[in-house]
Length: 317
Image (tube, rainbow, N blue to C red):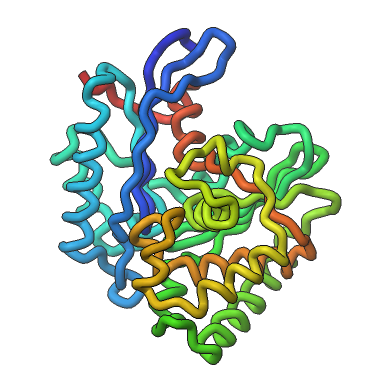
C-alpha cells in the first residue's frame, strides 16, 4: 500500500449514498478525512416498476455531486464509486451509470451481490477484527447480504431481496404500526430467513455482526448517540430484549413523532420498522440473542480495495 495517498469511496445504495475520503498511513491503515451521507431513496418504487424513476435518479445525482463538492478541498484523491442492488436490478441501471459518469466525471461500477458481500466483509473487519468467526449481515434499501467467515477463514455468502425500502413499501402502510401488517412482514421474514440460514449453515460459535444504516440507526437510538459518531456505535451490542422493546416504542409513534427522535436520521422514519423487524428475524433465524454493530462496511471495503489496487478508481484533481 502506498504511503500517505488519499482515496475516496462512494457507495450508491438503494436508499442512502455515502462518501468517505481517507489517507493511507505508514502502518497500513487509514486516517478518515471526510465522511458524508445522504438519503436519496434511489430504489423508490423500483421493485414495482423495475425502473429507476427520473426523480429518484436526479435526487441521487444531485446528492452525489453535493458530496463531491463537500470534499473538494481534499483533492487530489483517487475515487472509486460502486452501485448496488437498485442499479444492478433496474432495467435503466446502465443509463443511470452513464448519467453518473457524465455528471460526476468519474465512472460508477455496478457490482454484483457477491462482490458487495466481499467488500462489506472487508470493511466490517476493520471494526470487529478478522480473528473470530463472524456472521455479517448488511441491510440495504434493496437487498440484504449475509456473509459467514468460519474458523477456517473460508467465506460463504447468500444474497437476498430483503431490502428495507421494498419491505416498507410492500408491508408497512401505516404509522402507528398496524398489528396485522407487522405480522405479515414477520411471517415473510421468518420464511425467507429460514431458507437463508439453511443455505448458509454457519457453525457455532460465531459473532453476529450487523452493518449499514439500519443497524447503526438502531444503535444510535438505543445508546442516544446524537450527533451520529461511528466511534460511539462501533462494537456496541444490540440485545434481543432491547430491540424488541424499541419496536414496541416505535410502533406506537406516527411518522412525525419518529421524525422528532434526535438520533434517527431524517428519511428513515418509515424504514426503521422493517429494519428492526429484519434485525429481530435475523437473531431468530440464527438463534442468537445479540448483534454487534459495525458502522464500517461496504464503503470502507471499497476504499481499502481501491488502495490495494484491486478495484478501479479515477483521480479527481
